[in-house]
Amino acid sequence: MIMTYRNSLEVAGLGLLLTVLYLFIAVPTSLGSPAVAATANVERATSPRNILVLGDSISAAYGMSLEQGWVALLAGRIAQEHAQYQVVNASISGETSAGAAARLPRLLEFHQPAVVIVELGGNDGLRGYPVKRLRDNLRSIVDQASASGAGVLMLAMEIPPNYGARYSQAFRASFVKIASETGVAMSPFMLDGVATDASLMQADGIHPTAAAQPLLLSNVWPHLEPLLTQQGSIELDLSAQESQAITAQQDPLAE
Image 1 (cartoon, rainbow, N blue to C red):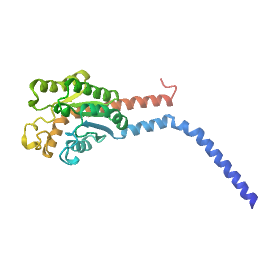
Image 2 (image 1 turned 90 degrees about the vertical axis):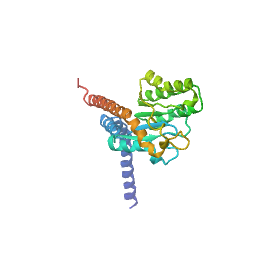
Image 3 (image 1 turned 90 degrees about the horizontal axis):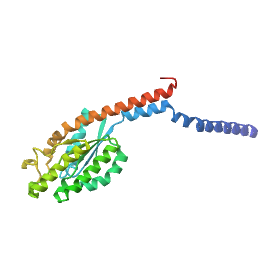
Image 4 (image 1 turned 180 degrees about the vertical axis):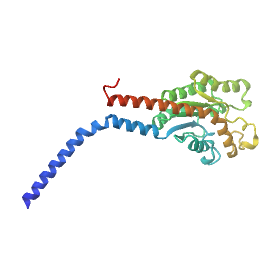
């Protein structure tokens, strides 16, 4: 009985050793195989792609629940009309262009967005920060997002006229200037038709009410949707190119 038990242990040990050797040799090869690469490519192409909203209190649903904000409404519309995307709201009340520029590298690395919506500048203007600083920060944000491969939509902002005509005009021109220089898409003032209607603004006169949120989305959507279609086409082109490369690896004799 002892000999039989010992023999069974030896056989089991040999089987385990052979299994380990097989896994050690075979698994790395399969992970690098065209079939596995093709599967990973399909999974990446079919998984939801992120739309990153980088904003301040306007996008952080100040004075209301997050579910009432225009970004949440955007997420609902995306789910219905562009289900290959999902929305990530990285907006913070009180955020400035400098703060967002500093946060962006980690956000890009973690979320790997296909599209970045930039809704910033209001707090820079309200605090009277130099226009050049705002432009430098916006340019940095756009450059970072573009370098990651994301499409960018910049939402233009405006400040009240009591800051002086010269400063207000330079502030307003900043968004057109950066969008023109970098070639990114731009949406006109997202509070157009809202900021001048007291019934759609909160008591502070700065933040829109919950009732105004659908109007904000309506102002942004016509400029965002073409970008979603464009980024989707780019992804399909890249997937097709990678599939062709994988096919060539499977058939070395293919022309």
